[in-house]
View 1: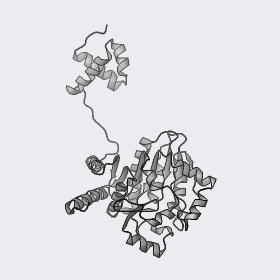
View 2 (view 1 turned 30 degrees about the horizontal axis):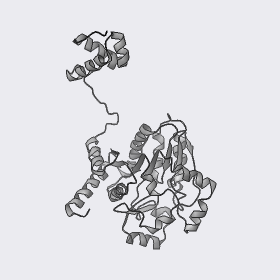
View 3 (view 1 turned 90 degrees about the vertical axis):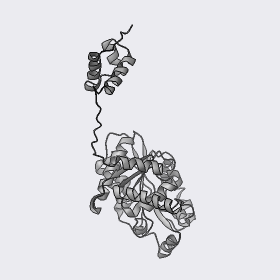
View 4 (view 1 turned 45 degrees about the vertical axis):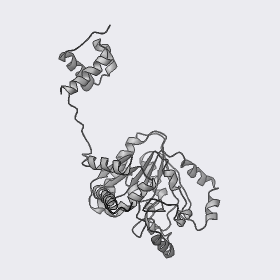
Length: 323
């Protein structure tokens, strides 16, 4: 029969074993010949009496915890990570480091990770963890036309796969095709099917969020004719993910042009456990909100000023009743 204990000396012994020596509660119970519930009660009592004080050390010195929680609640996001707003030349690297930290915390062996296009995503590479086995990186869209090669999804896949010591697949088709028939034909290719089939097994995705105008990587890809750009402006597009355009409400279905994009259907992103959107700058706020409303991301990595701009958009809309 376990002995009944109710003294501070025993409390201190239990705390020392548990907190300083990393002995499990079950082993403490056996060592001191007391019950497992008694160990638990003594540890709880020690905190209540301030014999033990738990201090959470934040190695990243996060200053935006409250802002992150507000964003998560307001936009019903799984997680929000807010970084410092810094000068343009360093902002993408700052965001990439935060994104890498989050990615390192949620990945598991054998995960399949989808990768979009853009410079911020490749900046993640130096901060990658090598603790995982058999990770597979797949591009979420085809090649990016006349754009700088380092923005291309296939290139980003190679960089991340190498940094994480994983494997990379490639989608060697245009990001945008001229006809629906061309798309149907290419979908029959074995190498294309191999990538497309991975879209149903994605554990996480990393996507940049563009503004759907001349500032975006999509518009700089070389795939947009002046006529297309005119159509996009008339359609009141607010953002793009993986070359797919959407409006303020997040609706991508009404944009006829999206049918020519060769890659993942944005609706599939809604089923991915960790759909991580990465974007910074006040000018991205509207596009980020559209992506959230469309359900295309459930995790957001952004900078402080953009985060505040997101709240301002919601407040302005609420005050005018234009939801």
